[in-house]
Length: 219
Image 1: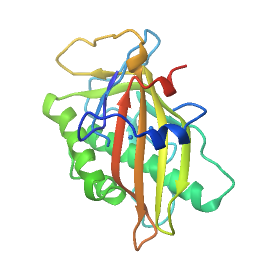
Image 2 (image 1 turned 90 degrees about the vertical axis):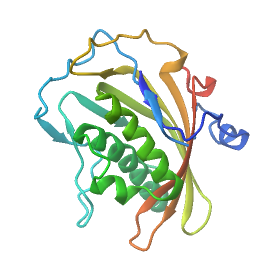
Image 3 (image 1 turned 45 degrees about the vertical axis):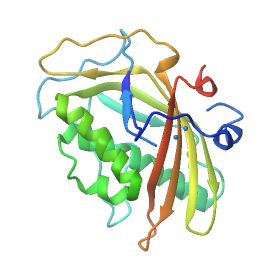
């Protein structure tokens, strides 16, 4: 499993739970990616081939995000039929990817991270990234994000609540054996994020809560 994103250990609010009646999202900063025997083995080279994140925006002025070939984030529920909600979901994806991009680069001082984060959302993202860098960790495999629900709270504010499935992703370290943790309830995390649209039209994440093992995200 990966390390979940959280400023503090806290459960997602009841209002968030109501928005996720179908399944299960919350202040982001730690994640335990869970391994599987079928997961891709990561390269030990720092120069492992990188591929563009599937959700990386081609919009001029937006930073490009690249992942190593052995790691992938998959986002479901990308289209709602509402252009504004779809923009919120797209930038939520980019925020998630920007944190992992910083982990793979081994630096919190990346353009994408600052581009998609602000306020407490930036604090959470930095804590999350530093947690990996301090230990020399990376991650590999596939993390799935599903049951994504967006709510427009105003002209420039919104929330995105979603689940992550870490059963096919896991922590790696160049000098330590890979620990294959069996899939369990803790392989699933509920997130509740709040976003604000800045002057450039980017929906930046400014706060996040998480609840590892949430029943709303269990298969």
